[in-house]
Length: 490
Image 1 (tube, rainbow, N blue to C red):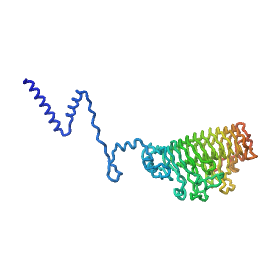
Image 2 (image 1 turned 180 degrees about the horizontal axis):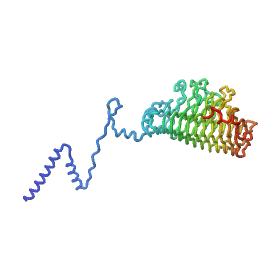
Image 3 (image 1 turned 60 degrees about the horizontal axis):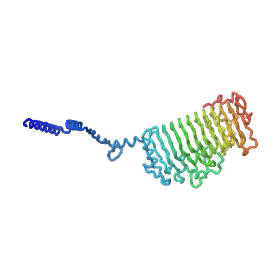
Image 4 (image 1 turned 60 degrees about the vertical axis):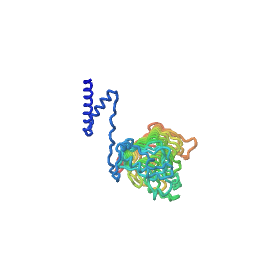
C-alpha cells in the first residue's frame, strides 16, 4: 500500500513539473508538442501541422496605403487570363466596350504569355483602338471567341483613321480563336461608286478623294493591322466586311497566317484580303479569301513570302504590287505561291508596277495554281494605272526577273497570258511549264484572246495551252539587263 502511494506521488510530481515547464517557456512549446505527439502516437493518431500565416504585402500603387494578399495576387496572374467582361464590357453590341478592351489589354500587357479573352456568345462594339507595345511582355495571346463590330457612326472616326484595330511593336503576339471581326463596311463602300476601278490607297492612303456619303470620312480604315512586330500569328478567326483592307502586316517579321477566313462582297471597293508591306518571313496557308480587291497584295519591302493552300475568289487575284508609284523604289524578292485555287476573279497571279519607278522584283514562283472563270490568269503589267491618275509614259520601271510559272491550269474569260514589260527594262528570266489554260465554256470577253507579250524574255520549258510563242528566248541585251543597270539593284 505504501509503495502504491509513493508511485502515485511520483507521477503527480512529474506531471506538475512538466506543466510548469510548459507555462514558463513563453511560446516555446516543443516539450508540450512532444508530449502530445507521444500521446497521439500511442493512440494511433496524426496531428496535421498548423497552417502558415497569410503572407501580406503592401500595395505600393493603391494610393491609400492598403494591403493585398500575396497568395490571391499570385493566383490572379498564374492563370494569366484577362476576360474583357470582368473589365466592364457589356457585350450587347450596343454599349461602347472600348474602355473594357483597353483595361484588359493594359493588364495582359504586364504578364508574359498572358491571354486576353473575348468570350463567345457576346457582340462587342469597339471604337478604333491600338493594342500597343513596345513595353509589353512577350507572347501575349488575344483569344477571340466572340464577335467584335466596328461603329458605323461618323463621330467614332473623327476626320478619318487608317486602321480600326491595331497591334503595334509587339513580340510574339497571337490572335486565335473562332470569333469574328466585322468592320461593317457597307456604310463606307458607298463612298466609291465604281467598284471595278482599283485603288492603291492601301499604301497611299491619301489618294481617296471621294466625297463623304452620310457623313463618313473619306479615308477608309483597315480592319486589323499589325505594325512593327515580330513573331506574329493569326489563326482560326474570321474577318469580314472591312471598310478597306481586311488584314495588314506592315514592318513585321516572322508572320504566320493559317485557317483564317476573310470575306466581303465581290463588288465592295478596295477591300484587299491580306496586305503585306515591308515584311519578311511570312507564311500564309489554309486560308479562304473572298473580297472586292486583291486576295493577297504583296508590296515593297517584302521578302521570303510563302503562300500555299489558299482559296481566292471573288476578288482581283493574288498580286505583287502595284510598285514604283510616284517614282519610288520598290524591292520584292523570294515569293512563292503554290497549291492554291483562284476562281471568279479579275486576275489570277499578277505582278503590276507603275511607270517611272525603280528597284526590282526577283525570285518569284507560281506553282500548281488551279484557276476557274478568271479573266487574266497570268499577267505582268508594267504599265499599271488605277484609273484615278493621269499616267504618262515614263522610261524607268521596276525591274522584273526570275519569275517562274509552273502548272497553271483552268479556264479564263479574257486573256490567258499577258506579259506587258517595260521598253527600257525588259522582263528577264520568265519561265513557263505545264500551262493549260482554256477558254471558259461560258464564253470570253475578248475576241483576240491569244497570249500577249511585250519585251518579255525567257524560256518555254514544256508545251503550253495555248502556245505562248510571243515570249522571246534568251535574255535582253546586256545594256538592258536588270542586274546591270544602276538604281535597279535592291
